[in-house]
Image 1 (cartoon, rainbow, N blue to C red):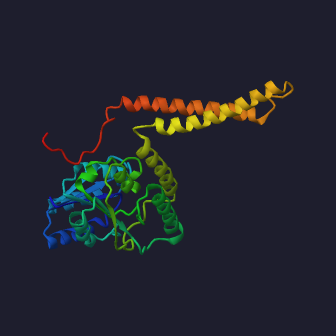
Image 2 (tube, rainbow, N blue to C red):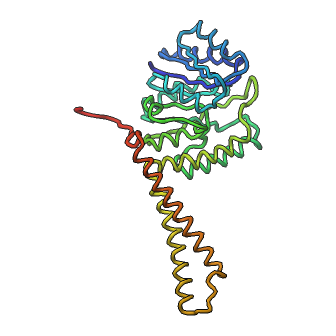
Length: 313
């Protein structure tokens, strides 16, 4: 199959017929074999009924329905498990992403050799104060932390080589950082394409200000997990040793001072409490690293590496 088009949604019944017809038109024009996977994330309107009606008219349309709202990451995860296309396209259901971008995104994957191509909505129709400015800030932070030179990490319109979506696990609210997940899984060729951003035609945005707070915390989490999930002692052991040595150095200084001067008030010094605190923190961090290593070493997935090719096996 040429393409799998993954569309997570919640309460988008009004836009689905128009979006489905638009996708079908583009697919027929380019003679692609395709599937459209709608993921209904616990909609309270009649979105699922619309999906079933569309399915009865077009067998290329498939659907996954959640019992309740689990979030966009869960929807993408389940759709990625089901997708069979050589190239997988993700897009939003609100008609702000244009299906006309799909052929060029697919070409960049197949002909230019990208593992992942992310859309960049350079010109947006969102509220500048509540959306654009925070988005630019977090995109800037993510670029510096991850080293991936993308302008819009959270753009819903992306294209993936099939093995990319099978090699990553999207959980929590990590859909914002799929390029980072892909990089940590060994997919280095990540590109970007300027795409059209259309004004919302139906309904309202389902994302509020909390996504920026959650997004920052998720970035810290994914960075730590990507670097140290299989070697936690390298992080906790390092900082534990640093704090322990600081506390030990201060303690030695205080003890030597007390030996040389019997009147030296040991426990009345701020350094005494500083050394005690540093020693305790250092030991706790070191023990956390040790326990993390035990868990990592005994995990059934401790050697779960993505292998590109095998020959003669």
